[in-house]
Length: 81
Ligand SMILES: [Zn+2]
Image 1: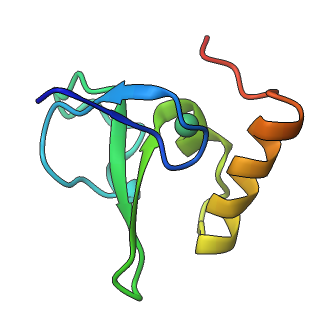
Image 2: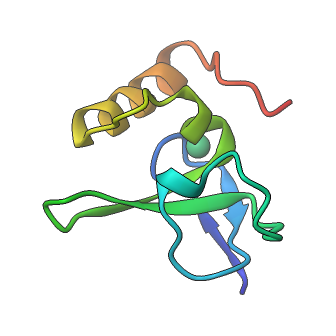
């Protein structure tokens, strides 16, 4: 409901459902949101758009999230397509 912004790149995004996790990414679960909340084992969570999720490695860490911010700020190489 409503819009939010991606923790990685800051783009405005919409979230269809509640909290999902990275392990269901890539499967069609019927959600039409443009972002998911990624939760880490340490309890922290980050709301990320799909381009950012796609740029993350298989086992993302908080450090990878920080890297997303840097990538977008310096080069804006993440594509929305
Ligand atoms: Zn993003």
